[in-house]
Image (cartoon, rainbow, N blue to C red):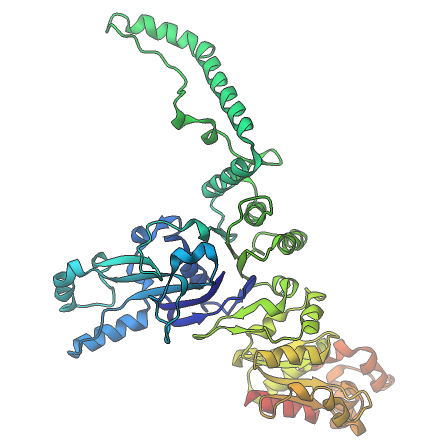
Length: 533
């Protein structure tokens, strides 16, 4: 298993330290946070390949962190002897007997850490020292990678030329399933795992007989005619025969089918799901590392549920999974405790989350937990009417909707406020939690939540009981009845309090769309002030 990843100077990362979970890692982050880059860097160091090609073939200037290049060019222009930009990816592995050949202390750890591991570096080639110095005289922000080299070594300082067999890796990108590689991948597993030696031999013999029958059948008349045609031209007439050499063996002439459709022509969701299952299959020579990019892509809700169940059932202790996702369903179902939140040089983990809270959200896979994880600031409200009203109150107060200022308003829809606050506390989010008093004293309601509340960081806002137990009577307390009737379009004949209680969502929608502003309940106004900052 990988115990630590260090990435220096690669794409978005100037200096990233990532400590993966032993079994499953759900990698989550906002757009451009580096999820795919992290997966790419790990795969590059494990396999020496990227996009199906060797690192040397794929090397280009855009691998390098742009800020580091700009600093280098600026310092050199100022006459400073700044070191040339480099890329360094280090994978630290656990101490297992089969990995001892990779064990050593040639890594960047201080103090010295002797353990199995791999380092991939992209650095200036000393053979091109003169050319590099000449280039720097007219330097640009596009590095001359033609003068760079790839150095792939174990921590024992031994050069690696091909992936060590102990580090078998399966890479499944469900965003763009490449059909040809998918076919090759499946054929290799099917042939290796599904056929006995005697079966392989029998298929080979049958295939040769089929080709021989082609020569004696469909090609015979062609050969007879060609023999007569060429007889007068040379002494050795040409005929057409089926190739029986080993390079045209039957393995290259068959492809897997799914429901009688060639695998390469089946749906991308189907391809991705089958590839993930094969990579994790208990009956195959399993990959030590399985990397899955966005498994939710191309899959319906039902198919995704089936796939996640398959992942859960196949995951084993000796296999480490890395999964990137934009889906709350995937996050909730596989477990919040496996979350790795990217953003900054040190990803955040939720390993300290209570197991009961993890199980709570697993039972509610449809809840949009990812919004809570990714938001800068959060307002937690009890239901959709509170959500609608708070957004209008905030916009009246500050001239912009909360989301425009990086504030996400989430309706808990009956979820436990304590569970939501625990998750927010684990992520150290700024939170304004708003709830009805329901006839209880605010201090009593606050007591059970005190563990996760921090002044100035996570605060709870509750309406004063004497002004009403829920949102609607609070609105009536702070506004003249005539104003509310006009805003809501409720006639004098109707009981306004009863109408508002019965039509909670409609009340919120009409207030939100009205030209006239209302006076917000004080606890909601205080929450808006707090979360705005």
